[in-house]
Length: 494
Ligand SMILES: *Cc1c(COP(=O)(O)O)cnc(C)c1O
Figure 1 (tube, rainbow, N blue to C red):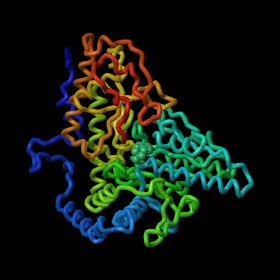
Figure 2: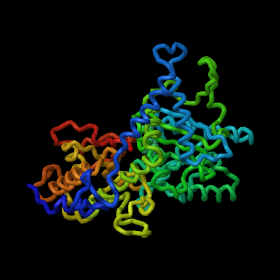
Figure 3: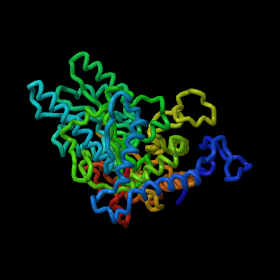
Figure 4: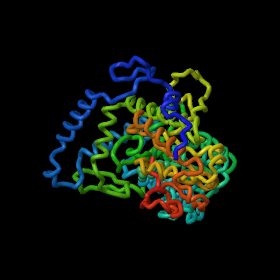
C-alpha cells in the first residue's frame, strides 16, 4: 500500500538549522545553539520564595473573612505590573488592569471599556449613542464575536485575503470605520495561521482618518497568543503601548504565558480608558478593593503558577523558550515545504536577508508570528492525487494520537483548507521529529490508487472553522471511518 518516496530522517536532518554533530556533548547534543532546558536550581529557589510568601498569608481554612486568598491578590498585582512593563505601559500614565479567566473575559472588558467611552463622548456631544459598531478581521477568535453579540455592538467583519496572510489588512479595515465605531480590535497572533496583524499601520491610518474627519478611534490589541511571544522574540516590533493609539491589550496566561488554563490579563494604558462605570468598590473584605471583572472569584493556582514562571524563568527564560518554539516551528515548516506542502505561516525561506548564515537563530531575521505552523497540500501533490481530501491527513494523524485540525480559512479566503500545528514548549525536538515522520508517512500512504480512503473519493466537502460558533465538524468528513471522531473539526486553541 505504501509508496514511500522520501526518507523522513534525511528530511529532518536537512531541515535543522543546527544539525547534531557527530561527537555529542554531555547532553547528547552539540550544535551552535544548545537545546535549552529549565534550570533546576532556579526552579527550587522560585518555589521556596513563593511557598514562603503564600505561607505568610495564612491557612485558607482559618481565613474566615473572605472566600478569596490574599496571596492571589498580591500575585495578581505583581504580575499585572510585570506584564505592564513587558508591554511598555507609559511611565507618565497610570496603567491599570486585572487578571481574568482568560482572553475571552479580557476581551469583553476591553470592548466594554471602549463602548462606554464612546457612549459617553456621544452623549456629551448630544448625538445618538445607540448604534455602536466594532471593527475586526474575519479571522477573529469566537471571543470577539461573543463580545459584540452579548453587549449589543454591531460586528463589522473585515474579510481577510490570502495575499495578506489570511489576516485583516488595515487598508481594508479603515473602510468600515465611521462615527459609531467604538474601536478596532487588532489580532496579534491569528488563531488560523499565527500571523500578526499590523498594529503600527492600523494606527497610522487611524491618525490620517482623525486628521481628515476628527474621529478618534482607539485600538484594542488581542494578544491572546502574541503578547507573550513578541516581547521576547520581536523586541523591535511596534505593537504594544508604544503605539499611542493602543488603549488596551489582552493576553492568555495559559497560552505562551506558560501557566495552567484559566488565566488571562487585560491592561489599559491609563486608568482614564477604563470607564468608571465598569469599576466597583468593595468595602466588605476589610479594606477597599476595586473589582472590574465579569467573574468575582477565580482560582489562585494559575496566577501563582504564572508568578512561579516569572520568577523561575525570568525574561531570559521566556526569551529562550520563545526562540526554541520558533526554531522548532521553522524546522517543521522546512520539512513540510521540502516535501508535499505549502506553508502559510513562517515560511522558512522568507528570511529577511539579514545575516542569513546557517546558524542564525534570531527570530527577528524571519517573518514575525507566533510559533504556529499552518500548511496545506501543495499544488503538485493535489494535481497528482486529485481525489485526496486534506481532511484525511488530520483524520489519519488522529489515529496516531496527534490532534491537528484541518479547517477552512476565514471569510474572504474560505476555499483554502488549512492544517495547523501549535508549537509550544512541550513539543520537543524529538517529538517534532516523530510528528514529521507521521505527517510524511500519512501523506504518502494517501497517495496512489489504493490508498486507505479510496472509496470516499469525490465526497462533497464542507466548511469548518476553528474556535467558531459555526465550527461544527462536517459530517461528510467523518463518514466511513468506522470510528467516532466528533471533536476533529475543532482546533485546540493556541
Ligand atoms: C485563544 C484566543 C482567544 C480566547 O482566549 P481564551 O484565553 O481561551 O479565553 C481570543 N483571541 C485569540 C486570538 C485567541 O487565540
